[in-house]
Amino acid sequence: MTNEDELVNKGEDAEMLLGLDAFTNMVDSQIQAATQQFFASDPEDFEMREDAYLQYRALAELISTLRQQVEVLAQIKSKATPEEE
Image 1 (cartoon, rainbow, N blue to C red):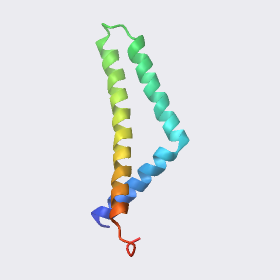
Image 2: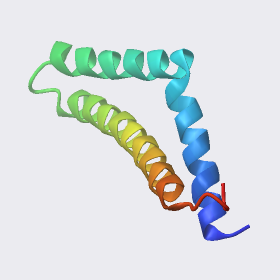
Image 3: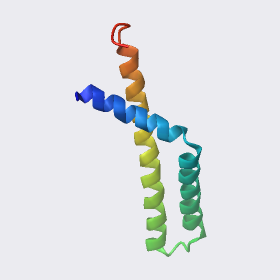
Image 4: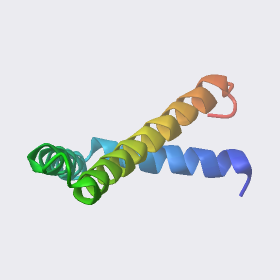
């Protein structure tokens, strides 16, 4: 399997995940929970706030990575010639 094939597979998997309502609903729910935890915590409770922030950042990074993989897939597809498709 070539590097491009791997990128295509990752892009297709990412596209599928982002298209699943169950996945996006779960991620949205977790982002909302982390945000609520952050705002509900005392300003002096640095550990709880940091945990909530790190959870939010991890989820945001996950979604960003999946979107980037879908973008790479789109770029690869746009470069493909008609014989390669």
